Amino acid sequence: RALCALVAAALLPVGRAGSQPTATTRSPTPSQPEGPFYPKTFPADRDADLTQVLGRAAKAQGTPLYLSGQVFARDGKPLGNVTVELWQCDVHGRYHHAGDDGVPRDDNFQGYGVATTEVDGRYAFKTIRPVPYGGRPPHMHLRVGAGRGPVLTPHIYPAGAPPPHLPSPPARTA
Image (tube, rainbow, N blue to C red; front, side, top):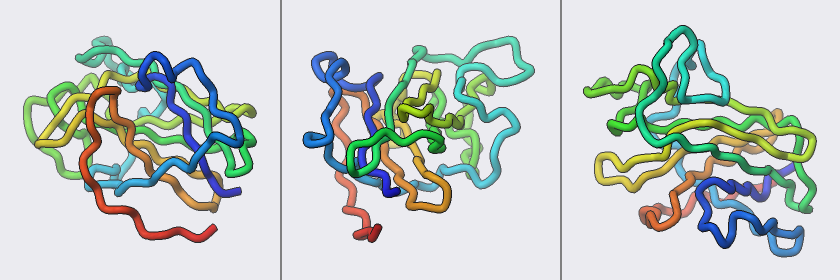
């Protein structure tokens, strides 16, 4: 089952967030480079709420964001039981893994989370609105995979934030 489209409603312009694409209007979501900040080791707390770290009373700094979406196969059918990973920098532009040891850092931000799609392909995260860092526009990284099949790594950019020019990923075969 090859992954095709990923619909993320939280960051789309208002006019598009409520409209669901049909099987005939859905186009494949482009994959982008994973980047240097994909976790080399995973945190103990890796649920779908990145605003609360297990064992800490304080919440993450930043503007709360509820991100939800749906994963579909190329034929337009929703894909259940698919792993969706999310990672992003904190409100200070710092990742919590892969050697980003800069300060300041929000230790109350989880930085990485995992959700599994429901039968209808839906998933949800609670996080913070992404911020720019190091010349990059605000964005969030997703990694979507179903078992041993192909992995899709899209980035999500808030409405109004132009994505950077990135080279096209190599052609994939299904």
